Image (cartoon, rainbow, N blue to C red; front, side):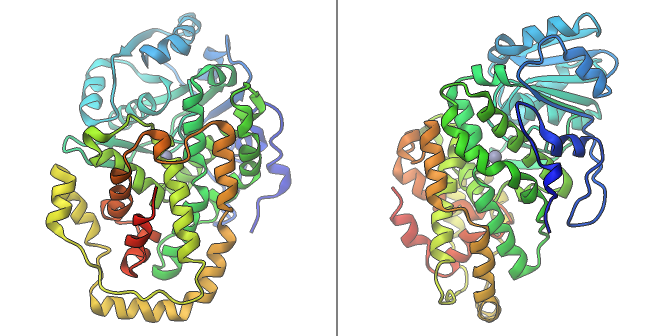
Amino acid sequence: MSIPDDCNSSSGFDEGDLIRRIVAGDFVDPSTGQHVVLPIRAIRIATSLDGGEADLLAEAGITGRLALIADAHTWAALGRRVARNLRHSFRLDVIVLRHPKADEASERHLTERVGSADALVAVGAGTINDLVKAVAARSGRDYTVFATALSMNGYASNAVSLFTDEGMKTTRPACSPRGIFIDLNVAADAPLRLTCAGLGDSICRTTVQVDGLLSHQIFGTPYSETPFLLQSGDEGEMLAAARGYPGRDLAAYAALARILVLTGIGAAITGSTHCGSMSEHLVSHTIDMFAGDDHPGSLHGEQVGISTLAMAHLQSEVFGREAVPEIRATRFDSEAIRRRFGASGDACLAEFRHKVINALDAARLRDRLQELWPGLVASLRAKMRPLGDLVAALEAAGAPSTAADIALPVDTWREAVRYARVIRNRYTVLDLADDSGQLVPFVEGLR
Ligand SMILES: [Zn+2]
């Protein structure tokens, strides 16, 4: 199964033919043979979009009274310009949030403030995008996003990540935007750290695909090649071009922008975030959930980047062995989990119990692995990108590649990798490694 070359010839500083075909409804999902139909009406990646904002909203089918939502930084970076250029064509309310967080309290606050707006315009990146997406989904409004940074891959997805009031980082269904607009000059003016975070959030294709295929082959969980095929045309270029971020090489920014958008599209097509978030994201979420005062203020994508390297390393160890792993009943301590996760401890345990296996389950899984192992590891190895390629891209961009680089205490880092498996009912290399006695020694070796 492959995507024909002619629909992946993304060249120059634009969104590329593949994205254009998807938006036009002209893309057939090779996994299903069905035309892909998404709510996204317009995606534009260009050197500059200055002056074209109203036309872009019209192309996205946005009408009526608008609320433009930004924070102080994204207002200065792009919001002011977008507001000025939209006021000629739209009735527009401007909401500049102070210190917004991607949590339920901020969502409630924004819901009250958007008032009678018919549609929402997000100007920002991770937090603003998630908050506006969440409010749009709850209220049934259309929204579009003008990106201010290439810091994460959630622009196109139909899910939203928010902290609950109890402190649990959750992902819940939402709706993709009507339009996604990325002005590369604006993205290249964003702090380099944000772009490096976007790279970190994108290199996880390899660990995500290996975990997804592992779960599918052992347990028959849903798995589609399509999200990964979508990225295959740009991934090599994105990694090779990462060294161009510090010098504002717009071709490098365009390659990253396409991958970020295509990752979200993959989630929207499959209706699941499994294609963009597996063991490496569990580790990152766990850092956020229990680092507490030790949290160094690192960004999601920075954490995903270093977690991806760790999980790629673990996968290469676990699936590099010819011997079938000796699976045993899951050993865990409910009280220790409650202590570590505090108010969200019970919610974690509810997720984790789906994956806990007893002695009988373990015997069955051993038999299953005995039968599958040589073919399973061969198929997983075929999806892995060499760890050295990922490290080289992060280092060339100037992105963090170790826990020390993000000032995360090594004990917190080890604890996050040790306990990440409990926060989601998603089977990954962490589960196989832990139930076969390989996780604890791996964690002890982490630096
Ligand atoms: Zn992510």
